[in-house]
Amino acid sequence: MIRGLIDDDKKSFDDLYFYYYPKLYAFSKTFLKVEDDINDILQEVFIKTWDNRKKIKDVETFNAWIFTITKNSVVTYFREKIRQKDFESRVRKMAVGELVFNDSLEYKDLKERVDQLVEQLPEKRKMIFKLSREKGLSNREIAKKLEISIKTVEDHMLYSLRFLRNNLKDFEVLTLLYISLFL
Image 1 (tube, rainbow, N blue to C red):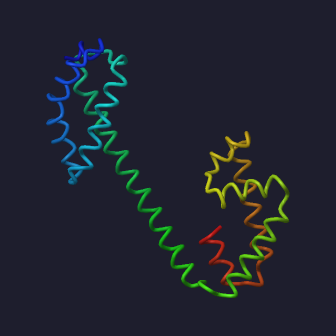
Image 2: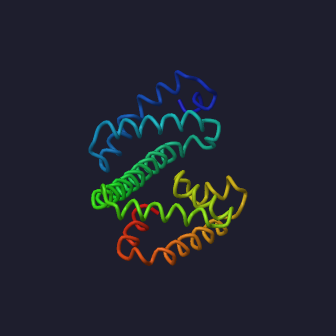
Image 3: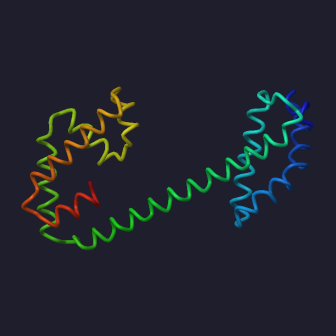
């Protein structure tokens, strides 16, 4: 089966699928309980197996290889779920912040003041700040887009936030809440 897989034989791949699927399913079920999640992960495992068939060097170690791919896919699944929960938590916090500020004159004043201050930033710093906060790009994405180092992006963001905090002291607690939730 594995030699056939390496030689692009679809029948060998089908045979391999029917042989390994129940084993990988049972293995994945020890970590995951939701059948749809297991099926999604195993679908990815078999796609990776087909895509990497030419890289299989040793037929004798194939069993360990495919179980390692499955284990790594399960780990990746858990990491994505953790990131998703962190994101949901941040969105909930932001929603609570918006409820506090909803229809508030203070919020509008603060937002206007922040916008004015952002416009006062040096051009490159302003661009980096807007890419981060308005477009939602990561520091790595900004660095790649602008062809600068990640450290440079981090420095610009640090100075931008410091500038905003220093110039928004008259808004006190609202400022801290706004900056932590929205900036």
